[in-house]
Length: 216
Ligand SMILES: [Zn+2]
Image (cartoon, rainbow, N blue to C red; front, side, top):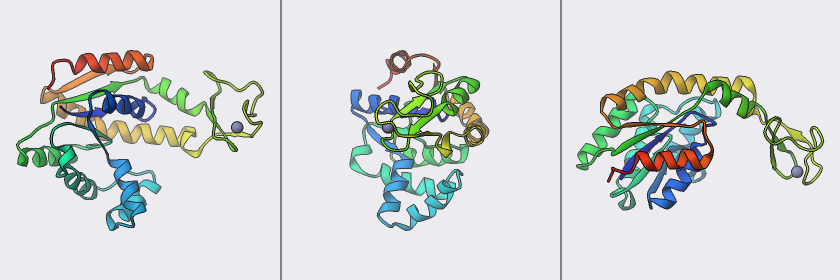
């Protein structure tokens, strides 16, 4: 089973992907993780990628395709994998199809977690983190007992730059403009499975499993 998991920032894609990898014994292929690893190892590819990531931009297609191509050639990616964060553009999707075809393979399914943009904004913009112990809170869904103060250690709560309205809006807009054509691309190929992301973690997961039932 070779699947791609898609969903905008804040859709809970990370936790769903962790669970899928565990339950279905998949090799997790996350470009974000690979870039960070390459960067830590001082590889040129990683250093170049980080200049994009730091600006909040998508990493160049050629760099991204290359890191994925290398990864797919490894033994543990032969049978089953879950792609996370790649492909993000139609150009990347075409490149991926080409790589897999050379290996006599193809994607089995594309799971798309569909969420409401306004709800995602609210979810992310309301997030607060403790400066001392990194505990996370939410102004509406999980407020601290005392405004601005951590329940656990009394530390000061703050809003991460990533969670500020403009940053979230920016990422959502990038995601939408770049990803919508990709969703159409996989829809036309008949392998797109939309899953309603506006439910509890467990319900979203159950829907994903259902969508994968007939897939080998
Ligand atoms: Zn704290």
